[in-house]
Image (cartoon, rainbow, N blue to C red; front, side, top):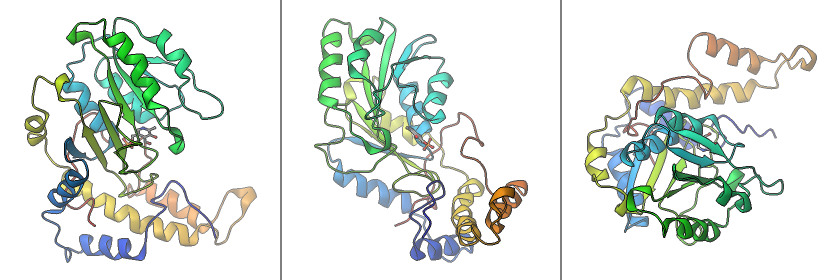
Length: 288
Ligand SMILES: Cc1ncc(COP(=O)(O)O)c(C=O)c1O
C-alpha cells in the first residue's frame, strides 16, 4: 500500500461520491457552511468561530483586525510553510525568526524572549507535525512582557494548529488568544482548501470580528468547484502512480497525469493561485 501525503490523503469512497454529486449538481449544499459553523460553535461555545478558504486568509483576517502597522513585527519559527509568511508580508509586517529545537522542530522557547522588541505585536506558535508546544510556557513569557505594556502594545498569541486537528480544549487554545486549523490538501482533515479560526480574546479587537466576517464574500463557485474536482483527479493519479513506473526516467502513468492536469490548469501547486484576498469557505467546500 502507498501513502500519499500531499493530495487529500484521507479521501474515502463517500467523499468521492460527494465530490461527484457536487460537480454534477445533484448534491445540494446551500447551508453547508452554516451547519459547519453551528457544529464548531457547539464545540467552542464561548469563542468566536470563523470559516475561511485557507489558513493564511484566516491569519490575514486576524492581522487586519489587529490593526497591525507597517514595520510591526511577527515572531515565528523559520521552519514553517510559505503560507505563514504570506499574511505577515501582506500586512506590511516584518517576520522575526526564532530558531527551532532539533528534537521537536518547534520554536526554541528559551530564545523567544530575546526576539521580542517593542514592535512585536504577534507571536505565532506552530505545533510542527502535531508535536505540541508547551503553551503554558509561551503564555508565561508573553504575560511577563505584556504586564509592563500599554494596551496597544500588547502581544497577541496566535496558535498555528495547521498540522493537527483536535477539539480538546485542554490541549488546544487554552493559553493562546486565537488558534486556527487548515483543511488544505495535505492536512489531517482535508477538503482541498479550507480553514477554521477560533478567536478567544475579544479584548484585543475594538471592531467586532463577527461584523467584519459578515462582509467577507465566499469563495466564488468556479474556484470552489476546483476543490471537488481536485479530489477526483487525484484519485485517478494515485491509482496510476506506480503503473508503467520507470524510476530512472522519473516516469509513470500517474506522474504523466500530474503533468497533463497541470498543463491543462486542472490542478495547481499549493503555492500557486490567488494572493491576498480573503474568502469565506463556500457552501460546497466542506460538506459532512
Ligand atoms: C505550519 C502551517 N501553517 C499554516 C498553513 C496554512 O495553510 P493554508 O493557507 O494552506 O490553509 C500551513 C499550510 O501548509 C502550514 O503548514
